[in-house]
Length: 380
Image (cartoon, rainbow, N blue to C red; front, side, top):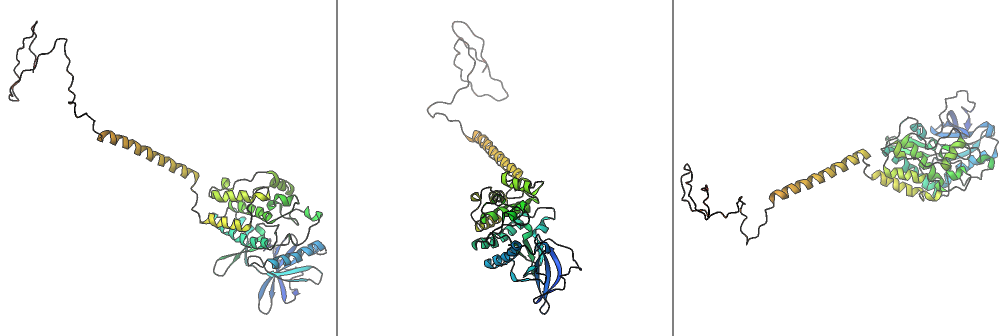
Protein backbone atom coordinates (compact mmCIF):
# COMPACT_ATOMS: atom_id res chain seq x y z
CA UNK A 1 0.00 0.00 0.00
CA UNK A 2 3.05 2.22 0.39
CA UNK A 3 6.72 1.92 -0.43
CA UNK A 4 7.90 -1.57 0.42
CA UNK A 5 10.34 -1.89 3.30
CA UNK A 6 12.40 -4.86 4.43
CA UNK A 7 11.10 -6.98 7.25
CA UNK A 8 12.56 -5.64 10.49
CA UNK A 9 12.48 -8.41 13.08
CA UNK A 10 13.97 -6.00 15.63
CA UNK A 11 11.17 -3.44 15.25
CA UNK A 12 9.92 -2.83 18.82
CA UNK A 13 6.29 -2.62 17.63
CA UNK A 14 6.26 -6.19 16.27
CA UNK A 15 4.14 -8.24 18.66
CA UNK A 16 2.45 -5.19 20.20
CA UNK A 17 -1.28 -5.58 20.94
CA UNK A 18 -3.46 -2.71 19.72
CA UNK A 19 -6.93 -3.38 20.99
CA UNK A 20 -7.99 -6.66 19.45
CA UNK A 21 -5.24 -6.57 16.79
CA UNK A 22 -1.64 -7.68 17.02
CA UNK A 23 1.16 -6.06 14.98
CA UNK A 24 2.98 -8.73 12.97
CA UNK A 25 5.46 -7.00 10.64
CA UNK A 26 6.19 -3.77 8.75
CA UNK A 27 5.04 -3.86 5.13
CA UNK A 28 5.51 -0.31 3.88
CA UNK A 29 6.67 3.20 4.62
CA UNK A 30 5.47 6.63 3.63
CA UNK A 31 6.48 10.23 4.32
CA UNK A 32 4.58 10.39 7.59
CA UNK A 33 4.57 6.89 8.97
CA UNK A 34 5.13 3.17 8.73
CA UNK A 35 2.46 0.66 7.74
CA UNK A 36 2.34 -2.68 9.53
CA UNK A 37 0.45 -5.88 8.89
CA UNK A 38 -1.78 -6.79 11.82
CA UNK A 39 -4.12 -9.64 12.60
CA UNK A 40 -7.10 -10.41 14.80
CA UNK A 41 -5.80 -13.55 16.56
CA UNK A 42 -9.14 -15.34 16.90
CA UNK A 43 -10.71 -14.97 13.45
CA UNK A 44 -7.39 -14.32 11.64
CA UNK A 45 -8.67 -11.15 9.99
CA UNK A 46 -5.77 -9.20 8.53
CA UNK A 47 -5.54 -5.42 8.83
CA UNK A 48 -3.09 -2.66 7.98
CA UNK A 49 -1.97 -0.32 10.74
CA UNK A 50 -0.40 3.06 9.93
CA UNK A 51 1.70 4.54 12.74
CA UNK A 52 3.24 8.01 12.69
CA UNK A 53 7.02 8.18 12.76
CA UNK A 54 8.53 9.16 16.13
CA UNK A 55 10.04 12.47 14.96
CA UNK A 56 6.65 13.86 13.87
CA UNK A 57 4.40 12.11 16.39
CA UNK A 58 4.26 15.20 18.61
CA UNK A 59 3.52 17.59 15.75
CA UNK A 60 -0.16 18.42 16.14
CA UNK A 61 -0.53 19.31 12.46
CA UNK A 62 0.51 15.77 11.50
CA UNK A 63 -1.77 14.28 14.11
CA UNK A 64 -4.68 16.32 12.75
CA UNK A 65 -3.82 15.18 9.26
CA UNK A 66 -3.97 11.52 10.28
CA UNK A 67 -7.36 12.05 11.90
CA UNK A 68 -8.51 14.06 8.88
CA UNK A 69 -7.62 11.16 6.60
CA UNK A 70 -9.96 8.87 8.53
CA UNK A 71 -12.71 11.49 8.49
CA UNK A 72 -12.37 12.14 4.74
CA UNK A 73 -12.41 8.46 3.81
CA UNK A 74 -15.50 7.75 5.89
CA UNK A 75 -17.31 10.81 4.56
CA UNK A 76 -16.93 9.45 1.01
CA UNK A 77 -17.78 5.82 1.69
CA UNK A 78 -16.83 4.40 -1.72
CA UNK A 79 -15.79 0.79 -2.24
CA UNK A 80 -12.78 1.88 -4.34
CA UNK A 81 -11.37 3.92 -1.45
CA UNK A 82 -9.51 2.13 1.32
CA UNK A 83 -11.64 1.64 4.43
CA UNK A 84 -10.42 3.05 7.77
CA UNK A 85 -12.21 1.67 10.81
CA UNK A 86 -9.97 2.27 13.80
CA UNK A 87 -8.03 5.09 15.47
CA UNK A 88 -5.91 5.22 18.62
CA UNK A 89 -2.55 5.87 20.27
CA UNK A 90 0.37 3.60 21.09
CA UNK A 91 1.67 3.35 24.66
CA UNK A 92 4.40 5.85 23.68
CA UNK A 93 1.77 8.34 22.50
CA UNK A 94 2.12 7.89 18.74
CA UNK A 95 -1.24 7.95 16.93
CA UNK A 96 -2.27 5.19 14.53
CA UNK A 97 -5.16 4.24 12.27
CA UNK A 98 -6.39 0.74 11.37
CA UNK A 99 -7.31 0.07 7.73
CA UNK A 100 -8.35 -2.83 5.58
CA UNK A 101 -5.45 -4.97 4.40
CA UNK A 102 -4.96 -4.99 0.63
CA UNK A 103 -3.36 -7.80 -1.32
CA UNK A 104 -1.86 -6.60 -4.57
CA UNK A 105 0.61 -4.06 -5.89
CA UNK A 106 0.84 -0.31 -6.18
CA UNK A 107 0.56 1.33 -9.59
CA UNK A 108 4.02 2.81 -9.05
CA UNK A 109 5.45 -0.72 -8.88
CA UNK A 110 3.78 -1.62 -12.19
CA UNK A 111 5.26 1.47 -13.83
CA UNK A 112 8.75 0.59 -12.65
CA UNK A 113 8.68 -2.39 -15.05
CA UNK A 114 10.33 -0.09 -17.59
CA UNK A 115 7.76 -0.22 -20.39
CA UNK A 116 4.42 1.52 -21.05
CA UNK A 117 1.20 -0.21 -20.15
CA UNK A 118 -0.95 -1.58 -22.94
CA UNK A 119 -3.39 1.12 -24.07
CA UNK A 120 -6.45 -0.93 -23.11
CA UNK A 121 -5.01 -1.70 -19.66
CA UNK A 122 -4.20 1.95 -19.07
CA UNK A 123 -7.70 3.00 -20.14
CA UNK A 124 -9.23 0.44 -17.79
CA UNK A 125 -7.18 1.66 -14.83
CA UNK A 126 -7.98 5.31 -15.58
CA UNK A 127 -11.70 4.51 -15.72
CA UNK A 128 -11.39 2.73 -12.36
CA UNK A 129 -9.62 5.73 -10.81
CA UNK A 130 -12.28 8.15 -12.01
CA UNK A 131 -15.11 6.39 -10.15
CA UNK A 132 -13.84 6.91 -6.56
CA UNK A 133 -12.41 10.29 -7.53
CA UNK A 134 -15.86 11.43 -8.66
CA UNK A 135 -17.33 10.16 -5.39
CA UNK A 136 -14.73 12.09 -3.39
CA UNK A 137 -15.44 15.29 -5.31
CA UNK A 138 -19.16 14.83 -4.79
CA UNK A 139 -18.43 14.72 -1.04
CA UNK A 140 -16.40 17.95 -1.41
CA UNK A 141 -13.11 16.15 -0.83
CA UNK A 142 -10.10 17.00 -3.01
CA UNK A 143 -7.34 14.40 -2.71
CA UNK A 144 -4.43 16.79 -3.51
CA UNK A 145 -1.83 14.01 -3.62
CA UNK A 146 -3.02 11.74 -6.41
CA UNK A 147 -0.05 9.73 -7.73
CA UNK A 148 0.74 6.11 -8.69
CA UNK A 149 1.87 5.12 -5.20
CA UNK A 150 -1.59 6.08 -3.91
CA UNK A 151 -3.32 3.87 -6.47
CA UNK A 152 -3.36 0.23 -5.39
CA UNK A 153 -4.26 -2.61 -7.77
CA UNK A 154 -5.77 -5.42 -5.69
CA UNK A 155 -5.78 -9.10 -6.61
CA UNK A 156 -9.07 -10.97 -6.48
CA UNK A 157 -9.67 -14.67 -5.99
CA UNK A 158 -11.06 -15.03 -9.52
CA UNK A 159 -7.97 -13.37 -11.00
CA UNK A 160 -9.73 -10.09 -11.61
CA UNK A 161 -8.52 -6.61 -10.73
CA UNK A 162 -9.89 -4.26 -8.10
CA UNK A 163 -8.57 -0.76 -7.58
CA UNK A 164 -8.31 1.25 -4.35
CA UNK A 165 -7.35 4.88 -3.76
CA UNK A 166 -5.13 5.46 -0.71
CA UNK A 167 -3.83 8.26 1.49
CA UNK A 168 -6.40 11.03 1.79
CA UNK A 169 -4.23 12.76 4.38
CA UNK A 170 -3.91 15.89 2.25
CA UNK A 171 -7.62 16.11 1.54
CA UNK A 172 -8.73 19.72 1.23
CA UNK A 173 -11.54 19.55 3.74
CA UNK A 174 -9.29 18.07 6.43
CA UNK A 175 -7.23 20.99 7.77
CA UNK A 176 -5.82 24.27 6.59
CA UNK A 177 -2.07 23.93 6.18
CA UNK A 178 0.35 26.47 7.57
CA UNK A 179 2.71 28.37 5.26
CA UNK A 180 5.62 26.27 6.51
CA UNK A 181 3.79 23.05 5.65
CA UNK A 182 2.90 24.31 2.18
CA UNK A 183 6.56 24.79 1.33
CA UNK A 184 7.47 21.21 2.26
CA UNK A 185 7.04 20.00 -1.32
CA UNK A 186 6.70 16.24 -1.70
CA UNK A 187 5.87 15.59 1.98
CA UNK A 188 2.99 17.76 3.09
CA UNK A 189 1.52 19.80 0.24
CA UNK A 190 1.84 17.18 -2.44
CA UNK A 191 4.33 15.59 -4.81
CA UNK A 192 6.01 17.95 -7.33
CA UNK A 193 5.96 15.45 -10.21
CA UNK A 194 2.15 15.31 -10.11
CA UNK A 195 1.24 18.71 -8.69
CA UNK A 196 -1.05 21.11 -10.53
CA UNK A 197 0.09 24.67 -11.27
CA UNK A 198 -2.45 26.22 -8.89
CA UNK A 199 -1.43 23.90 -6.07
CA UNK A 200 2.25 24.69 -6.69
CA UNK A 201 1.42 28.38 -6.35
CA UNK A 202 -0.63 27.83 -3.16
CA UNK A 203 -3.78 29.03 -4.92
CA UNK A 204 -7.23 27.63 -4.12
CA UNK A 205 -7.68 24.01 -5.20
CA UNK A 206 -10.73 22.30 -6.66
CA UNK A 207 -11.70 18.90 -8.11
CA UNK A 208 -9.91 19.98 -11.29
CA UNK A 209 -6.68 19.98 -9.27
CA UNK A 210 -6.99 16.21 -8.96
CA UNK A 211 -7.79 15.96 -12.68
CA UNK A 212 -4.43 17.56 -13.49
CA UNK A 213 -2.68 14.87 -11.44
CA UNK A 214 -4.76 12.24 -13.23
CA UNK A 215 -3.47 13.57 -16.56
CA UNK A 216 0.12 13.21 -15.37
CA UNK A 217 -0.59 9.62 -14.26
CA UNK A 218 -2.15 8.84 -17.64
CA UNK A 219 0.88 10.25 -19.46
CA UNK A 220 3.23 8.17 -17.31
CA UNK A 221 1.19 4.98 -17.85
CA UNK A 222 1.38 5.31 -21.61
CA UNK A 223 4.97 6.54 -22.02
CA UNK A 224 6.76 5.15 -18.95
CA UNK A 225 8.05 8.70 -18.39
CA UNK A 226 6.99 11.84 -16.53
CA UNK A 227 6.01 14.90 -18.59
CA UNK A 228 8.12 17.29 -16.49
CA UNK A 229 11.27 16.46 -14.53
CA UNK A 230 13.68 19.09 -13.26
CA UNK A 231 16.97 18.74 -11.39
CA UNK A 232 15.25 19.83 -8.16
CA UNK A 233 11.64 19.70 -6.89
CA UNK A 234 11.35 23.46 -7.36
CA UNK A 235 12.58 23.20 -10.96
CA UNK A 236 9.98 20.51 -11.59
CA UNK A 237 7.24 22.77 -10.23
CA UNK A 238 8.41 25.58 -12.50
CA UNK A 239 8.13 23.28 -15.52
CA UNK A 240 4.52 22.45 -14.56
CA UNK A 241 3.85 26.18 -14.37
CA UNK A 242 5.43 27.25 -17.66
CA UNK A 243 6.23 24.45 -20.11
CA UNK A 244 3.76 23.27 -22.80
CA UNK A 245 2.18 19.88 -22.23
CA UNK A 246 4.06 17.23 -24.24
CA UNK A 247 2.28 14.74 -26.46
CA UNK A 248 1.97 11.18 -25.19
CA UNK A 249 1.33 10.03 -28.77
CA UNK A 250 4.68 11.49 -29.86
CA UNK A 251 6.40 9.07 -27.48
CA UNK A 252 4.02 6.17 -28.02
CA UNK A 253 2.33 6.06 -31.47
CA UNK A 254 -0.16 3.48 -30.16
CA UNK A 255 -1.86 6.15 -28.02
CA UNK A 256 -5.17 7.07 -29.68
CA UNK A 257 -5.46 10.66 -30.85
CA UNK A 258 -8.55 11.21 -28.69
CA UNK A 259 -6.72 9.97 -25.59
CA UNK A 260 -3.71 12.16 -26.34
CA UNK A 261 -6.02 15.17 -26.66
CA UNK A 262 -7.75 14.30 -23.37
CA UNK A 263 -4.42 14.06 -21.51
CA UNK A 264 -3.41 17.47 -22.86
CA UNK A 265 -6.72 18.92 -21.69
CA UNK A 266 -6.40 17.35 -18.24
CA UNK A 267 -2.98 19.00 -17.90
CA UNK A 268 -4.08 22.44 -19.02
CA UNK A 269 -2.39 25.19 -17.02
CA UNK A 270 -5.68 26.93 -16.20
CA UNK A 271 -8.22 24.84 -14.22
CA UNK A 272 -11.15 26.16 -16.27
CA UNK A 273 -9.60 24.68 -19.43
CA UNK A 274 -9.72 21.15 -17.96
CA UNK A 275 -12.75 18.82 -18.08
CA UNK A 276 -15.54 19.83 -15.73
CA UNK A 277 -15.57 16.67 -13.60
CA UNK A 278 -14.11 13.23 -13.03
CA UNK A 279 -17.37 11.74 -14.26
CA UNK A 280 -17.01 13.54 -17.58
CA UNK A 281 -13.47 12.19 -17.87
CA UNK A 282 -14.71 8.68 -17.08
CA UNK A 283 -17.34 8.83 -19.82
CA UNK A 284 -14.81 10.06 -22.38
CA UNK A 285 -12.38 7.31 -21.43
CA UNK A 286 -15.13 4.70 -21.84
CA UNK A 287 -15.92 6.09 -25.32
CA UNK A 288 -12.24 6.06 -26.33
CA UNK A 289 -11.90 2.47 -25.12
CA UNK A 290 -14.91 1.38 -27.18
CA UNK A 291 -13.78 3.16 -30.37
CA UNK A 292 -11.80 1.31 -33.06
CA UNK A 293 -8.05 1.88 -32.80
CA UNK A 294 -6.39 4.58 -34.87
CA UNK A 295 -4.35 3.45 -37.88
CA UNK A 296 -0.68 4.40 -37.73
CA UNK A 297 0.08 7.48 -39.81
CA UNK A 298 2.22 5.54 -42.35
CA UNK A 299 -0.55 3.00 -42.93
CA UNK A 300 -3.11 5.75 -43.39
CA UNK A 301 -0.94 7.53 -45.96
CA UNK A 302 -0.35 4.28 -47.85
CA UNK A 303 -4.05 3.53 -48.02
CA UNK A 304 -4.86 7.04 -49.24
CA UNK A 305 -2.21 6.74 -51.97
CA UNK A 306 -3.62 3.38 -53.10
CA UNK A 307 -7.14 4.75 -53.13
CA UNK A 308 -6.04 7.67 -55.33
CA UNK A 309 -4.21 5.32 -57.70
CA UNK A 310 -7.31 3.14 -58.07
CA UNK A 311 -9.46 6.18 -58.90
CA UNK A 312 -7.00 7.41 -61.54
CA UNK A 313 -6.69 3.94 -63.09
CA UNK A 314 -10.46 3.63 -63.28
CA UNK A 315 -10.77 7.00 -64.97
CA UNK A 316 -8.13 6.08 -67.58
CA UNK A 317 -9.84 2.76 -68.34
CA UNK A 318 -13.11 4.56 -68.84
CA UNK A 319 -11.56 6.91 -71.40
CA UNK A 320 -10.10 3.99 -73.39
CA UNK A 321 -13.38 2.08 -73.35
CA UNK A 322 -15.29 5.14 -74.48
CA UNK A 323 -12.95 5.75 -77.39
CA UNK A 324 -13.36 2.15 -78.61
CA UNK A 325 -17.11 1.79 -78.33
CA UNK A 326 -18.48 5.14 -79.52
CA UNK A 327 -19.36 5.17 -83.32
CA UNK A 328 -18.56 8.13 -85.57
CA UNK A 329 -21.64 10.27 -86.03
CA UNK A 330 -22.62 10.86 -89.73
CA UNK A 331 -25.44 12.97 -90.97
CA UNK A 332 -28.00 10.61 -92.63
CA UNK A 333 -28.67 12.97 -95.57
CA UNK A 334 -25.05 13.10 -96.65
CA UNK A 335 -23.27 10.32 -98.56
CA UNK A 336 -20.26 8.76 -96.95
CA UNK A 337 -17.05 10.57 -97.76
CA UNK A 338 -15.14 9.46 -100.85
CA UNK A 339 -11.39 8.99 -100.61
CA UNK A 340 -9.57 11.77 -102.36
CA UNK A 341 -7.49 10.81 -105.49
CA UNK A 342 -4.67 13.04 -106.73
CA UNK A 343 -5.84 14.85 -109.92
CA UNK A 344 -4.28 17.09 -112.50
CA UNK A 345 -5.62 20.40 -113.72
CA UNK A 346 -7.25 18.52 -116.63
CA UNK A 347 -10.56 16.87 -115.69
CA UNK A 348 -10.40 13.10 -115.74
CA UNK A 349 -12.68 11.31 -118.19
CA UNK A 350 -15.47 9.15 -116.82
CA UNK A 351 -14.52 5.57 -116.13
CA UNK A 352 -15.89 3.05 -118.68
CA UNK A 353 -17.90 0.09 -117.51
CA UNK A 354 -15.83 -3.05 -117.51
CA UNK A 355 -17.36 -6.49 -117.50
CA UNK A 356 -16.33 -8.77 -114.70
CA UNK A 357 -13.39 -10.96 -115.54
CA UNK A 358 -11.72 -13.88 -113.87
CA UNK A 359 -9.58 -13.00 -110.91
CA UNK A 360 -6.52 -14.38 -112.67
CA UNK A 361 -6.89 -12.11 -115.75
CA UNK A 362 -5.69 -8.51 -115.48
CA UNK A 363 -8.06 -5.78 -116.62
CA UNK A 364 -7.83 -4.70 -120.32
CA UNK A 365 -6.89 -1.03 -120.69
CA UNK A 366 -9.34 1.05 -122.75
CA UNK A 367 -7.98 3.95 -124.81
CA UNK A 368 -9.62 7.30 -124.11
CA UNK A 369 -9.41 10.36 -126.35
CA UNK A 370 -9.49 13.75 -124.66
CA UNK A 371 -9.59 17.02 -126.44
CA UNK A 372 -7.42 18.85 -127.21
CA UNK A 373 -4.43 16.61 -126.47
CA UNK A 374 -4.31 12.86 -126.26
CA UNK A 375 -3.45 11.28 -122.92
CA UNK A 376 -1.90 7.92 -122.20
CA UNK A 377 -4.23 5.08 -121.32
CA UNK A 378 -5.47 5.11 -117.70
CA UNK A 379 -5.24 1.79 -115.92
CA UNK A 380 -8.43 0.48 -114.37
